[in-house]
Image (cartoon, rainbow, N blue to C red):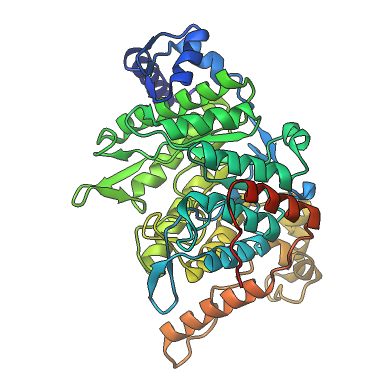
Length: 470
């Protein structure tokens, strides 16, 4: 039975796209829409419900995102939520509280930690924006490092023509060439519509180019209720749904069957400042409704804001906001969760303590989503009959056999008696020790020397000298 609220949002979305349309600030997008028989006016493309749903039906309900190591491919659209680190933060927050511009050394450090983290199956191509390289060369510089530090699949930033070319060509080199790229997507890129109801020329360009080259696209508006979307969440959801579906439709016009992720991360505006409110409960509500809508359209999805928080330090606020967002998205069926670990101050800064805190939260969220297994063994009637009422279960063989797979075993969280010491200092030490433990777990993948050489050669033709990182 179809949820009546979902149906009302869908019907309102169809009316908006028929009457108001979606603006694409790229002439070739409008021309492509014309070729498919759609009504256009200037930069605006209009959709009837029949036209739009025809394109949406072409997008696969699931696809595999692969990396250089085929054993680490990820099925996007499976019941599992695949977590991706924070991305594109401008700043790095040191553990002593110093906020500074992010540097390439921070990119390398974070990428190593995330590569070694089992909670993170998909990497962020630009986990921070290093300020110590030329801005126009940033994507080439970071991807050169990425493909030496990890063999997991990744989600990348993009931009105009040159950044998109850098991302695609370096990915092809690292993944064995374009023939391998054609087999299944090796790169996924997020295209953010510019609310309300338009997509700028950069996003439109790389959406079309990524689709043309057979790679994966995630269309993900980040509308803010009260500023860039209606103040009512239902109205904001109608607009977000329209923007997402129109973007996916464009990708299908370019290449039918393009792997497309339905993005839905609408949240509230802070009406006191006009800024985004990433830690608002409306972000979690958005994840819930985005999950319903994605299921209605039979699309894999990115819901909510990952581990985003408005807090500017790793502490109580950042933890409860991150848990709210991560858990809501997972329970709503999010296929991927971007910005899942390490981010503070909305999208602005990365912090190592926040990274390990979020990884602990992800472990808890995964355990909650895993739920329980019901079978004769797990119902444990024979064990209860044996032990109750005067025995204990700790030394039973049933406990020994199941303890490591049944219960979540934290790395960071403390369980035990309170010591007569500075509790805040002890917590801080646990966090720093966990950062060190995870960093020491890093083992570099085996990258052929020929791949590194070919990447250097390509970058040299682009006028980029890879930065040396100690």
